[in-house]
Length: 299
Image (cartoon, rainbow, N blue to C red):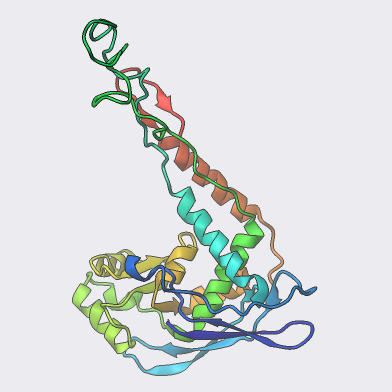
């Protein structure tokens, strides 16, 4: 998905070009896809600079354009944008690893209490145990053990990566009016697919919807569409932003993005701290319980 983003610095305006909003289109395209960030010499620019407000068309449920909405977000300078986004994506993917892979060493494999055969007079190589890693059924050399793969990233850096990716995807984004009333009676997946086509969306392409609140019937109408991701500000993540070919926002979501990731954002990080505490609580509940010993493995 091609998009272009212009940023203003203290000297001269430079352009930041994304060849696509997705660096994870498919496994066979991962190695060939690159960001076209210009390599600029080190300057004394700030970590985040404001970008020009991107006008986004507003469509009604019938697919007709009824106005425009502005998305004015912070964005990283060209010299650091690629590194910031890449670091945030790697952090998110690495923190999803459970780290429960475990193998048995030669000291943990069952058996091998006695010497298999005498040391001499057999013509065979001396062997002291059947648990040796050189024999089938023996231990594993340098095998994986339960470990914690999580890494940390600064909250401001993660917020800047999300706003940079969201600003880059604004050229292929649309704003739709609230359509929850259209599915008030019952969920209808066929009608939802028809609405996507009226909005210019291909059901075979990846799309991400960002709404302040997802009604139950809307969720049921869209859950069987495999290429669609439905998100709220609570579940918004960088990977799905980059993975989507099309971005669909509601007016409430646009107001949230401008307020949360906008140029004039001066809020505190209390909300982020609460989210991290809840995520840590969920991770604690995902501990693997050993049925024999009744102990919880720390991942």
